[in-house]
Amino acid sequence: MGLQIKGRPLRWLEAKNHFGHIKEHGITQLLNIWDNSKNRSDDPFLWGEEIECMLIAFDDENRNAKLALDQEDVLPKLQSYVDAHGGESETVPSFQPEYGRHQIESTPGSPYSGSLRDLAKVEENMRKRRKLIRQSTATKDVHHIPSTLATFPRMGVSSDFTDPVRKPTKQDESFLLPVTEMTSAHPRYLAVVNGIKSRRGGPPCVNIPIFRDINTPRPFTDPIAYHRPGGKLDFYLKEYWIVGKLTYGTGLLLAFNLRTNAEALSDHILLDCVSFGPLSCSLQVTMQAADLDQARALYDGLVPIAPILLALSAASPIFKGYLAEMDTRWDVMEVTNDDRTRAEKGQEPLKDGERLVPDSRWFPVKWYLSPDQQEFNDETFPYDEQVHERLVGAGMDDFLAKHFANLYIRDPLVVFEDKLQQDDATSNEHFESIQSTVWQTLRFKLPPPGSGIGWRVEVRTMEVQLTDFENAAFAVFVALLSRAMLKFGNTDNLSRAQGRDAVMEQKFWFSTNAYNEGESGKFEEMTLDEIVNGKTPGSGGLIGLIHNYLDSLHDEKDSVRDRQIIEKYLELIKRKADGSIKTNAKWIRDFVRSHPEYKHDSVVTQAINYDLLKTIDEIERGIRKADDLVARL
Image (cartoon, rainbow, N blue to C red; front, side, top):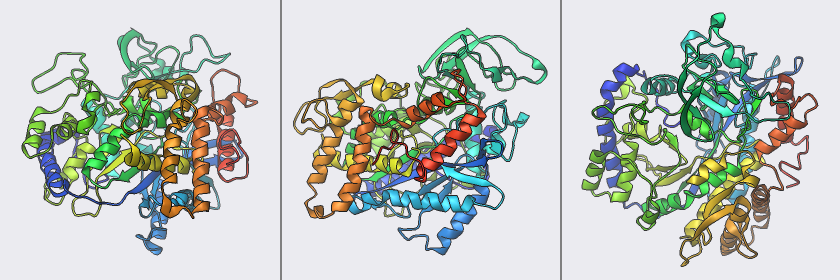
C-alpha cells in the first residue's frame, strides 16, 4: 500500500486544512530530487520483487480454512530472525506489514543484479522467505500456514472466515467484513481507507458478474445482500459500478444497504467496502535503470506489457464464495480505491476549484514519458496546470512535468500531525504522500534523497501466484524482458486482460514490430500466444527477444546450470501464453467445478474451499503433482 509512515493520522475534516501545505512542499521535494538526480548516470541494473502472502488457519476437524489474523504475532518473530542474522546481509530477507492482519509482505535482503546467477537464485530466496513465515506461524495448538493466494475465496461470507472469529460492527460500515479487526495495526492503513471513504462521500459498491453455471439461479440474487438488521429493505434507483465493464448506469436495485449505501444488482456478487480491494495479494517487480532517460524508456516499453502480465498471472476467479465471470482482482481494486466525488465523476455540477477526473486512483497508465513516444499520447490527460508550470519553470521537460502534474490533481489521503513540518532538502514524504497513493499499472520511482538508489520503474499488475516456482518465473521474465528491451528496443488491453480465460479468449493491441530496431510501429490485435511466443515462425515474440538477449551475454556462456533454471521459467510463461498450462484462475475454477461436492451453482462451499487451499499447500510443498498448473518443469 505504499509509503509506511508511523504517526498520528488526523481526522479527515482536520486533515483537509493541510492539503495545500502538503502539495506545495511535495512539489518542492520533487524539484529538489530532480535537481540533484537528473544528471545521475551509470547506475547498475538492479531489481527486486515484493511478494504479498496471506496467513491461513486450517480447522481439519471441521474442514474449514480461514484467514489467520496473525500479523502482529508473526512479524516480531520474523524481525527477531532478521536482527539475529545480520539485517543487511543479502541472504537475509525483509518482512513488512501489509494492509490486512492476515497479510505479510516479503522482499529479498538486497537487490538482485542482472547476472544469470542472481536470476537463478530468485526462487530459492522466495522459498526461504516462505519457510521462515511458516516457521513463525507454527504453534502446538493451531495449524496456520502462509499461502500466496491472490484473493481469499470466501472472504465476506456470512459464516465464519477469520481466526479468531470476528464480526462486522457499526464502526466498520460494512455488513460483510469486520474491517477494523481485519486491518493492520499500522496507523496508515485504516487512515487510507477512511480517506478514500471520506473524500468520495461513503463506501464503494462493487458488483461483480456471477459465473453462470448449469444450476446457477436465473436471475442470481446475492443472498447476503438481504441480511439486514431487523429485516428492513428499501428499493431505489441509484448509480452503480459494474465490475469488468467499467461503466456507470442506473437500474432497479435489489437492495439498499442502510449503513453502507451498497446496492446489489441482479446476477452480480456484492462487495460493500474499500477493504475488499487491499485485502488481496500481488507480486510486484521494481527495476533500477542506468539514468533518467533509460528509466523513461523502460517505463514506456512496459506500458503495453503490463496488461499482458495481468492476463498471464490471472488468479482471482472467486469472490465472497462465488465463482465470478472474471479472473483478476484489478477492477475490484479500481472501484474500491476510487475516491472521486460525484462532481469529479461528472454526476453533478462542479464547484469552484473542482475538475473532472476520468479515473480512480487505481488505473492504467495513459501517458508515455519519453519525447519520442508522444505520438501515442492520444488520450485526454488532465493535470494540475499550476504544478505543471512550476515544474517546467524549474527546468523539467513538458512530458515528465505533465506526468507528475497529473498526480497532483489528487488530494492526500492521509495527513500525519507529527509529519507536517519537514526538511524539503532531505525528505520526500510529502511528495510520496501523493505518489504512493496513486496506484497505476506502472510506477515511475524517484531516487530517495540521500540514498544510493537511482531512477526506477515498478510493475504493478501481476497477481501473486500459488507457487514460488511460478512467482520466480514471472519475476525473472519481467527482469529479463526489461533488460532485453533496453538492449534491443525501440490501453484498451487492460479491460480485456481481466475477462474469464483471457489467455485463450481475448486479443490485445500490440506492435507487430515490437522492439525490432529501425522498423516503424504497426499495431494489430494479437493473442497472448502470438505476443509472447511469436505470430509467425521465426518471429520469436517476447520470449524470442529474451533469448536473443541471453545469447548476447558472452561473459556468462559457462553458466549452464543457471541458464537451465531460467529456461524452465521461460517455458512456464510460454506455455501459460499458449494455454497448454493453465493460469492460476483457470486452475482454481476447474478445481472447484470438478469437486465432488460442487453443485454447479457457482457456490464455493466451506468444504470445497478447505480442499482447495489444502491442495494448493501440498502442491507448493511438492507433495502433490499438478501438471496442468506447473507441468513437470
